[in-house]
Length: 315
Ligand code: TA6
Image (cartoon, rainbow, N blue to C red; front, side, top):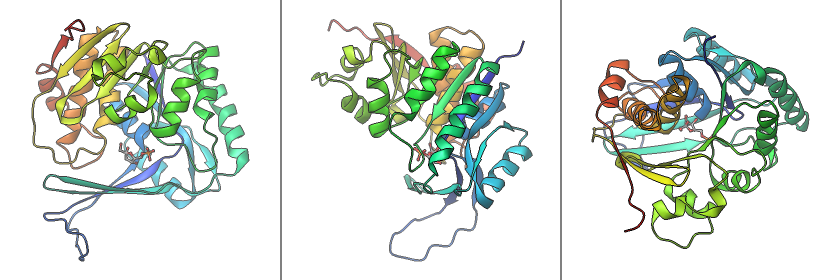
């Protein structure tokens, strides 16, 4: 049976990218081009996973005319979806990319009525058993409690379905610290976030990844942007080096790299191969104007240009 991925985006968005030649604040800027897509982190994961040939379904919460636009956009790209519909409208997220700068304005989204929390949890509980892997990505909608991702992880644990979690800030912190009984398979923090989660006073990132507060999570993929990543697997840390490219639109590269890692899992690939797929998908996305999209030729080319070395933790 084909491997099936479910991506959860509780706070999706219509992503708009305006590429501008010279972005200046305090002036009127005209965009001769714009790229609009169904977005929010998990939906970007889904689009790239689908481009990689994975059978993927998006779930989460949508609402209003923007929610309808989002599902129509997914239909146009033949991506399956099964959302909970709310009276609260889906948000907009705007990115302005210009030469070497990237400016993002992310709406926090409308306040969700309390009943939506219950309805989505029931929905998730009903559909999850059809899938081999789940990703949970992005911010929580306004009105949702900090422990909501722990509730989803508990459901996944009961059904024995692994979850890759990509969130940030307080919610990441809370979820990592309260999920010892239902740990995610993977988290994908950045260097700032890792410092906030651990109790480690080491200034060395590789050592921070080995902190006791993280031992319940099998994989930690620490993104270092254009400098690649560190991957902690069990008690080993690997340094992942990536080729340098001139980015067109790096928005969604983190999401694409998660899709690449899921691709590795779907193929039962080794950690090294999965890490290479992850980085290759992230770089390929950065070369596209559209957010959360890759060219498979680039993906294949970059997959062979990633180097992964074990970090010597004794030195
Ligand atoms: O990773 C970029 C991005 O996925 C954009 O597509 C935008 O929708 C945003 O992140 C949403 O992130 P948030 O953390 O607010 O859920």
